[in-house]
Amino acid sequence: MKLDRPTAGPQPQMRDILQGHRPRRLRQNDWTRRLVRETTLTVDDLIWPIFVIDGEGVREPVPTMPGVNRLSMDQVVRDVEKAASLGIPAIALFPYTDNDLRDPTGSEALNDQNLVCRTVRAIKAAVPGIGVVTDVALDPYTSHGHDGLMSGDEILNDASVTQLCGQALVQAEAGADVIAPSDMMDGRIGAIRAVLDDAGFEHVQIMSYAAKYASAFYGPFRDAIGSNAALKGDKRTYQMDPGNAAEALREVELDLAEAADMVMVKPGMPYLDIICRVKEAFRVPTFAYQVSGEYAMLEGAARNGWLDGDRVMMESLQSFKRAGADGVLTYFAVRAAERLRADRS
Ligand code: PBG
Image 1: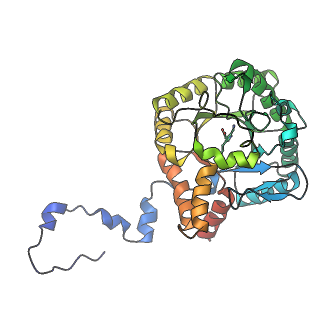
Image 2 (image 1 turned 180 degrees about the vertical axis):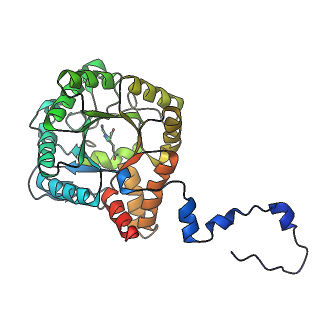
């Protein structure tokens, strides 16, 4: 490191000020920076969310998520093979559902031949080594677009939980490794655990969307699964208020008491403080979901030439690790994995 040359005029007494301390010493070149780096993103930290659609040979772009497609089952299998070859540990499935398969109770969720169940079987047959995460919530299947059952304007809690247990069961039977309830009904983790155990699925993991906020960052996702047009009202009576942090700890505590194996905070970047607090308080496997709106924000700006896409992708993912997350659900998973591989070679 070059020290600044003296210039004319009065000099501040740098020796006295610094007392020997120069934090820049450890930043002066790449090898030092690598040596003292506190957190590192690796491919092992990535979970890739995939949108599935009926049909064959379909790769249909999601307009509000440039670079993301809805994929038919055959294409999912192809892409999951690629993800596995890159070393991505797990993928998460989300179905696009046409209006004619939607009804007020989301009954398609309980159909053991529904698109998600068929896709899980196909992936498990073709790529047995990758973890498959399935979403438990009724919103892909309800005509009103809510995650639970409705009576008038009310989202019913306990009746929804019964329906969600049935959904979790058909997913486990199809071969899902991780059941991920994203519905935010009270008591659903314990109820699903009991139903899974009774059916002999003690080994199936539960990743709880424990602190899920009522966020406007989910907009593009709702386009992707076709529930934006359907959604009546908002989800504020079950998803959390963005102003709350202590409540997130309580949600996580309850879900862990109900035997959740892993917990999630969602969205990601606007809620890094929550990830940090959850990890510090409970020290359990904690995940962040970099949601559709976050992806759209970064990728939209990059495609306009306003941001360096690759760099903001890697920086945003690293920030989750620094905050304490063990892993990240991200639509960038494949690109980030490719980038990590290129950086290594
Ligand atoms: C629904 C669900 C949502 C997401 C995952 N599961 C949206 C919502 O709650 O409306 C959002 C994911 C994203 O925005 O990428 N149960």
